[in-house]
Image (cartoon, rainbow, N blue to C red):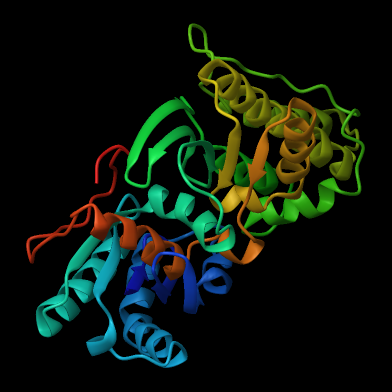
Amino acid sequence: MRILGIESSCDETAAAVVEDGRTVLSNVVASQIEEHRLYGGVVPEIASRRHAEAISGVVKEALEQAHTTLADTDGIAVTHAPGLIGALLVGVSFAKGLAIATGKPLVPVHHLRSHIAANYLAHPDLKPPFLCLVVSGGHSHIVRVDDYTQFAVIGRTRDDAAGECYDKAARAMGMPYPGGVALDRLAAQGNPQTYALPRPHVEGSRYDFSFSGLKTAVINRLHNAEQKGESVNKADLCASFQHTVTDLLVTNTLLAANDLGMDTIVLAGGVSANSGLRAGMTAACAQAGYRLFAPPLSLCGDNGAMVAAQGYYEWLAGHTAGADLNAVASLPITES
């Protein structure tokens, strides 16, 4: 079964064709990073306009690279939530048009579910149940994946997402957008033990995260040093920051895995590309005896292949939609 997947939730216009939820036949991404870098972050109005300009060509290229046609596909999957509402509407509207014109099933896909599904494309032996740490610019969740379309949120951030915290800390240090990538790169040159940073915890919750205080601590350290005329070793500060975020993410995830009796841990989302997190989680899982899966770097960011992969399992579960499908800016992963 071949599924065409369409993704437009933020600043990547993407489309892909995936066979049986596991085999990538094509995966095309048109990125807007260079344009948004001028503004230090994603500008929603610009993102929506660029999606509208790119989506037809991206879908056409995805079909051509897969050596297939719309008539040969079995369904059209599209990210409908969560994300920037204007950006989502472009993908949803385009997918609805294709579905109406071809008579193919329209499959709505939750963005976080699709990030988890990116792992199915790289790891043929990965099957639910497992515990997944989903970390991105807008989300930080510990999710129990009971089946391909059945999820339970075990822990989540109470304020900033880990990726958002990375970007804001990087911006405070004068790094270009996307800051998380630049911070990760500079952290490799620093000493993670140089600066003592807070490790916030959420009272009454064993698995939830809180990152806003950590972000504020970095900003305050920079401001205090500037006011006193002192220098800050940015490589050391980046390394200390990354070490702290990694420790928080890894500790809570392994605690949840132990409490729930899970033996398999999965990473997903844009921040799963972070070298510190991947190394920290790999070491911790090896020591504790957990199996660890993570997507290749090429599938960590937003892409159409992950949408098509999850769309396959949503279609098998009977989760299809009609012409009344709408985009939704915020939606729990437990709701399709």
